[in-house]
Structure formats: C-alpha cells, structure tokens
Length: 339
Ligand code: G
Ligand code: G
Ligand code: MN
Image 1 (tube, rainbow, N blue to C red):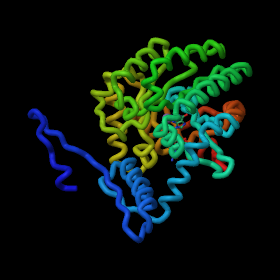
Image 2 (cartoon, rainbow, N blue to C red):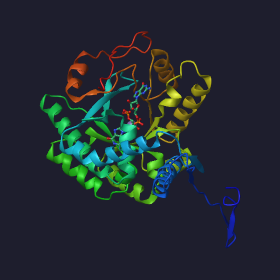
Image 3 (spheres, helix red, strand yellow):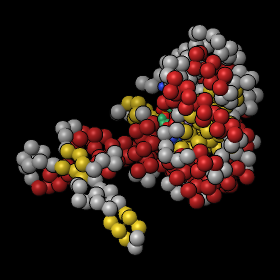
Image 4 (cartoon, helix red, strand yellow):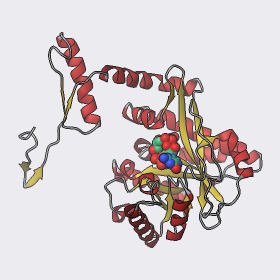
C-alpha cells in the first residue's frame, strides 16, 4: 500500500495514485476459487464505495450485497407498482413566521423488505444508473400534487432534490417547463436543491443546467452546505440563490458554541454574497430563536414539522399558527409513519 501510494512525477506534475483493495482469506472465507473471487469482488466494491484503501471480508457482507442487488433489481417495479410516494416537509420564513415552501422527499415501501431509507435507495439508483427513472417519476408526481393543491385553492411551492446525473442532463430545464405548463403552474412553485458534490462532479455541465433553470425563474439552493470541500468563493461562481446549512451544524445549535460560530459566519458570508440562507434540522425553539437572531432567512426541521404525506399537507397548513420562536413546546409534534 505504501509503495503504490507514492507520488509519480509525470511531466513535472506530481500525480498521487489512489487505490482500493479487498481481502479474502482461505479457507475462512471460502474453500473454492469461485467463492473466494466472488467475495473478493464484494469486499472490493465496499472498499471503493467507502473510498477505503483496504477492506477485509466479514460475515454478513453477502447478505448486504444481496439486499443491494435486490433493491436495484426492484427499482423499476417500485415505479410501476406504486410503491413510491413523496413526503413534504415545510420551511418557514423567519421574518413573516409563515410557511413559504415544502421540500419533497422520496419514500419507498418495498413489498418484502418494508420501508427502505432514501439514503440507501437513492445512492443505489445513482450508482446503478437508475436515478433518471426515479427523478422522472418524482418530477411528474410533484407537479401533479401541486396541481391538486392548486385546484383546492392553495398556490404552494415545492423544492425538489436533484442528483448529479439530473443536474448534468441538458433536457431537464425543458422537461420542467413542459411539466409546469401542463399542470398550470408558475416557476415560483418549483425550486431545486442540489448538493455541492453533485455539482462539482461536472461543474461545467451542471452550471449550464443551473443557468437554464435560472433563466426559467426557478430558484436553486445548495443542499447539505458545509459537508463538502468547496469554498464559498467557488460556490459563488455557480448560478445559485440559496445556501442550505447542513443539519449537522444545526441540530445541537442551542448547546454547541462551535456550531453557533460556524452557522453565524456562514449566514453573514452568504448574505454578503447575496444568497438567502436556509437552516435544516431545527429541532427545538432555542435553535430557532438563535437562527432568527443570526438573521437566517428560512427554517426547516422537526420542531416545525416532520415530512408528511401529500394528502395531509392542507389540513396541516390550515391548523398552522405563525411561529413564535420563543415558545417552548413544538407547535406540531407527530412521528413520521415509515412502516
Ligand atoms: O428524507 P430523508 O428523508 O431521509 O432524505 C435523505 C436523503 O435523500 C436526503 O439527502 C435527500 O436529499 C435525499 N432525497 C430524498 N428524496 C430525494 C429525491 O427525490 N431525489 C434525490 N436525488 N434525492 C432525494
Ligand atoms: O439532505 P437533505 O437536506 O435533502 O435531507 C433532508 C433529510 O433531513 C431528510 O432525511 C429529513 O427527513 C431529515 N430531517 C429534516 N428535518 C430534520 C430534523 O429536524 N432533524 C433530523 N435529525 N433530521 C431532519
Ligand atoms: Mn434537500
């Protein structure tokens, strides 16, 4: 490992190779070449995904691998058989204390495995080249939902999450425009959330798509801000409107001074660059109050509401009272039903 990691000088440029390895032991991990090779592949894949140099095969990896294969195989069925649905989580404007938008989050109940967390199946869909399938379903589903709400007299706005391969798809802006007009929606009713790492995978192509979305008057937010490696200076070159501070900096904001420093300075710098700031993961009134003092524009989190099914949104909105950030009990407390 040490010698393979040594830098190589190529035309005065130092190149540092990276590599991953998976280890199986004979006979502990199998007594045939075929089984050993298959398990070596499985453990190598794990090393690659986690960007580890070395992984040793362990009990249970076969089962994890089988689950992954099964989930990838069943993605198409999830779309065709109506196993997917969208949950909606509100964002509140700190100034007006009113709900300004909902974020759409995908959910999957597998017929045999039950609830599969989005972190798990979204990543698998991305890696297996199936994310387009889910994104197309999600887009038309969300637009239809907005149309249904509209028919009931509610002009709402929803932010959708995009993956790296969505954001480099040059046909996306046109498809979004078509869906908006087919459902009689205006561009302020749809917004985009995308992580900095998704954008940085192919910055040029992603920038083109984001510019095209901006020209169509859709707002774009950088999601999970603070967990990637890019600086605000890099991010500012992108055509974006909002920064969404990652929940890891927000969840313990009421007690962690370090988090307060990071969040306060991010809000300041973001504002200086003309960006609006959203904080996600607001779990209590003390954090909400802090964020409001720091000048954060929008709040989202369990303290306001957990993600809820589309057909509960209107009832929830009708019962929502503008938040007083000094209150001590959550205004809306329910457990998201994931079973
Ligand atoms: O909803 P939480 O419910 O667990 O979502 C976990 C992760 O999955 C988040 O990072 C979120 O951005 C991502 N996610 C949820 N729904 C979608 C979706 O429709 N498309 C994409 N690309 N990611 C999603
Ligand atoms: O990465 P993205 O921001 O799209 O992910 C949103 C995720 O955060 C979803 O999984 C959602 O369920 C979760 N989430 C939303 N609000 C809170 C919160 O207040 N606390 C925690 N722990 N998670 C939250
Ligand atoms: Mn998001």
